[in-house]
Length: 333
Image 1 (cartoon, rainbow, N blue to C red):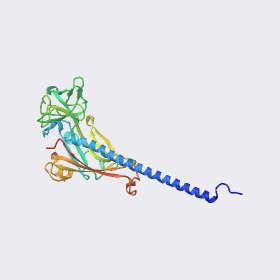
Image 2: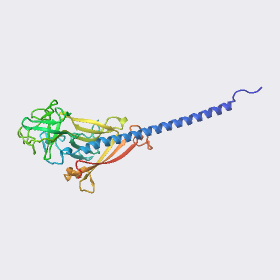
Image 3: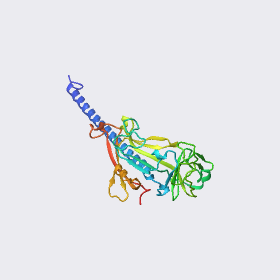
Image 4: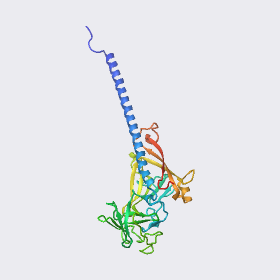
């Protein structure tokens, strides 16, 4: 009688071949999946670096007086200006890892600054501002030469001409007539006087009188501090790039800007120098006004784990180190 079907040996060989093929397919799938995760993580790092560069460089390039020229005569009629780092004009100021930054706590809590990382305070104006049609000092108001603005009650503005600049708060805004008012006794922090001249005089509500002429510029005041903070999310690496900014009515607003940024170190170039300095040295020489470029060294970290060659380091997250050098256009000579 002839034997039909498969022998036990043939069946075992077929099963073995099937297992080998299945293992090969599984290995290819696992390798492809790991490659996909690595490529995705690398793309995330590149996108984080691009976003950080665009957003941080925008504030850096806006720092300084900008549309207000290069005057050192800056009046400030905001209440408490001398005691609040966000009201007081500094233009640019940095803080090394061991230096305290104003209004920011260093610690492990969400939104708190990561110890050992640099921070930088930037001030300027947003956009190109608007031209003044008429400054009616007697009625503490400006008529804006525009069809519309985005100004609102509580905004802190800077007005300037070739001679001086002034920081003040809007107490009333009339959109129908494009008129900004700046009385005392209203708003937070409010204005200490209606005299906008330099130097400021807060000993009386009339202060130091000054009238800005037609075509003087007016714009919203920008005051921020950038730093590395804890985001409280282990799945995003635990740290992010944060910005603390001056908001409406003098309130400070903390914003998480880019996740997965776990280190920032900053150096500064002073006009005419041939070396880069840290913040402590610039502060010791009182040279913040002559800083004309900033070097940012950032470390970005992937959200995905087990995608790096070294799986034992920081859960196998990919890291990407980037160094950016940004010239301050308002200070280049």
